[in-house]
Image 1: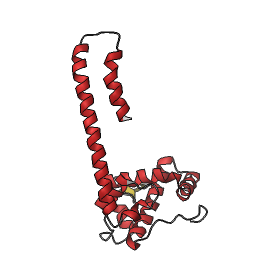
Image 2: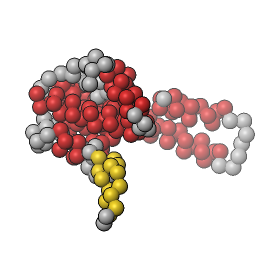
Image 3: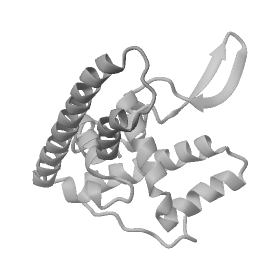
Length: 188
């Protein structure tokens, strides 16, 4: 998409039929900005390639990427923030660190229900959330998501539940050194 955008930006001044004040200045500036955008995109591709190489070299890479929804960026984020899970005694500790554990809001004698936590590692939480969204193509993940929807949860709430469940599975996979094994959709 970005490559097409750069080409559209470069070809737009040639296709323009109406001349307005500032057209000449824009004709000088826009190609320069488009060139800068192209350079940033090239750097981004190189960086993505290098991250993929580093991820492939890591011993836990195969375990991470065996789970549906976890790709290069998510795998790298998990390795950076979690590592081999030795810093977390349980999956609940990892979920709390990632901000995936529900929080009860209370003030004085007023106790409100559980809500998503606003604490934790925001980047890791986002990575788990996006991985859960990407995993909806996996039958087991889709079944769990649909179950939560049928229980009355909204889309975001169901995705958070799925992400939290996947944190538990990922923790066990990293702890035991096992690859992801999809269970049939009917079992829980």
